Image (spheres, rainbow, N blue to C red):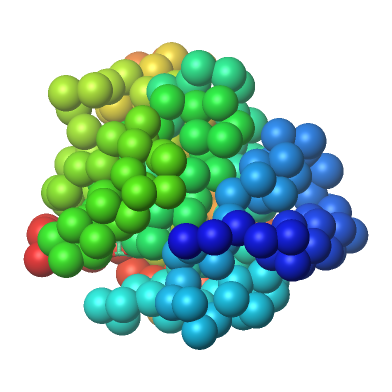
Length: 214
Ligand code: SAH
């Protein structure tokens, strides 16, 4: 794995494009500039790594479009030292962006093959501090709760109770929720054990949030 001058150039163009599309959070921009996205795709797709598009990885999953990663990361508003749970590890790219923003990251993936592959990749590229978990994201990660922030990167049909329970008071969850394959990004602030404020953000299309492990 090599991060060359040309890759940095492509990343600079990508962050410029994201800034034009409304991403103005400095931590997000720096993180996207710092994380070599081509490490998460096959070598043959170096150029594709820096286009603002989603891309198939394996096991019928995708690495989210850079704009989507940036958008969710900006809404999540990570502060240094925040304990963050990501549901849907996938390629591991989003987890690295959160780590770069200063979060202590736990990430959970339901597919064992993807969990294995991504765990070893994260170690190899210097993100071994990200804790990867194999399990059903609907259940969250009780052992490590409460989390300051929770980010779901698969399309849910409702807000999973167990994830809400594992959020600290004043914590925030960013989750795409919807039916028939398209979702609205929800920004949820937990104001009390059983209360929250909800803001509806943009429309997106995520792969489905499925129950159980595989
Ligand atoms: N965040 C990823 C993109 C994830 S795509 C990235 O940066 O590349 C969505 C991922 O969510 C897929 O890998 C899928 O297997 C996973 N997923 C779907 N349902 C899940 C569940 N219940 N628990 C954990 N992971 C789940």
